[in-house]
Image (cartoon, rainbow, N blue to C red):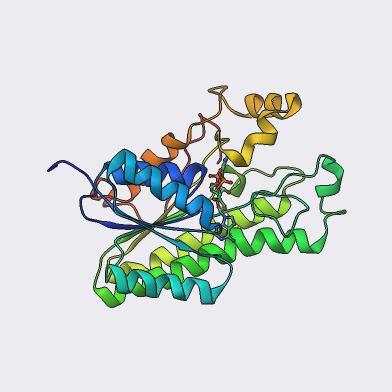
Length: 270
Ligand SMILES: NC(=O)c1ccc[n+]([C@@H]2O[C@H](COP(=O)([O-])OP(=O)(O)OC[C@H]3O[C@@H](n4cnc5c(N)ncnc54)[C@H](O)[C@@H]3O)[C@@H](O)[C@H]2O)c1
């Protein structure tokens, strides 16, 4: 028990029912954290809660939340305030890929790469990606940092960016720009929140085996592109991102602030 790294810490994970967010939830639960998962769908939330309870005996609260809506984020903040009175660690992992499905969540990429180039991209598609990946992260930081300050918690916030913050990917201008925005947002917030003892950092994963990359991984050309870009010549596992998130959420990283770490199979990001 004693060496659990997050014993009795309250951790909020947005996008916590799938992929990287869920892997963070599992790792944090194993380390003794009490979890709040914020994600869109109640059925996926119930499934994630059941798994975490069964496998780790974790204390888990699921709050259906759309991170793009400030009212949802404020309600999430209130739910955490009422249940636990504080939050110690935040992982902002909710995100979507580029695509032409503005109503969707884990957007299916349009199979025609030309359709996603800026010259053809529907405005609604661009706006949806910026809303979820950048504004959603900003709102998460806004509400959760306020909660930390009110509760006198010197907590940690980890924003999930991407190697796309630094690498231009044709057909994914919205995604790249949203993630570059998350990197800079992290730096500004780090400076703003340092006086309160709140550390804000980011992670820029390479290509990771999650539902978000399912289409890419089932496509020969997509796989060839990923292998050519990734010196380790393999996809990363969500657990490898979770261990980076754990590092940035504990005192092991106590001298880090406003940094972005790239678990990306050796990919050069500059
Ligand atoms: N998989 C990769 O290769 C990769 C690489 C770099 C960065 N990332 C980033 O990691 C994060 C997690 O992605 P993943 O690969 O686990 O994908 P995923 O699709 O498995 O999970 C994303 C989660 O975010 C949730 N979500 C989407 N829109 C939301 C909204 N408006 N409000 C609340 N929740 C919402 C989805 O429901 C889903 O549970 C994303 O920010 C993604 O951009 C992923």
